[in-house]
Length: 313
Image (cartoon, rainbow, N blue to C red; front, side):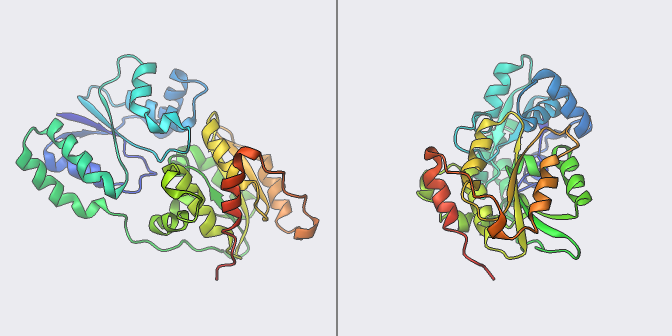
């Protein structure tokens, strides 16, 4: 069976599904176009949709003839239909696509999904069991440490955004270059140790009711907001993604450090908001403009975010 694999660069468990498919004896097919070409192709077919969706579609279209395509499931924020049901929505919007199947990127869900995928691919329960056992070590979050929070002659900013966006250099490459030009040192939220982020996310109000994407964003903010080395925050969302925009607006509303909110489409090269933020990083707190009033609909989440600003060592 020819199986197309769209393992995102943003994946928490980036090698699990490719290793598993090979153990099953499937022919693994990967996109034939570069990421830039895939993004352009997806943009032609779905203009106005978030860039990660366009990139995923372009990669699917560049697979050629396959029997099945595995799509990593993104951690959705509240109200994020694309992340919650990417295969179903793509199939409705674009005719003629191969069979699309969403697969999880969380250790607690991997083996159940792997069993379903395995039976589709090999139809041999024994082979599926052996394959799952062999790749089991790849189905846990790798041990990782906090990235360095400072660099000589650079001012540190925390970059907070959806994993599916920040992990794709085709989408955030221009932003990285702009930060370098301004003498900023970015610490990206998707590079933080996931267990640490999720532990901090337990501080959000009613964590059992929060969406996975909201937990990741909140946990990253909580982990970095009290770090003295972090001078400011850059919240990044895909252009056209209202749900992600609302999520970061809720989180940023009560921050006491300078911040800016950027929309990214993978094409924009200039970010004037960054220059304004860079100028504010050296401004004494008493001289900064007051934080905007908090929208009523965001009060609970932002209050929880403000409560995480303890001064970590």
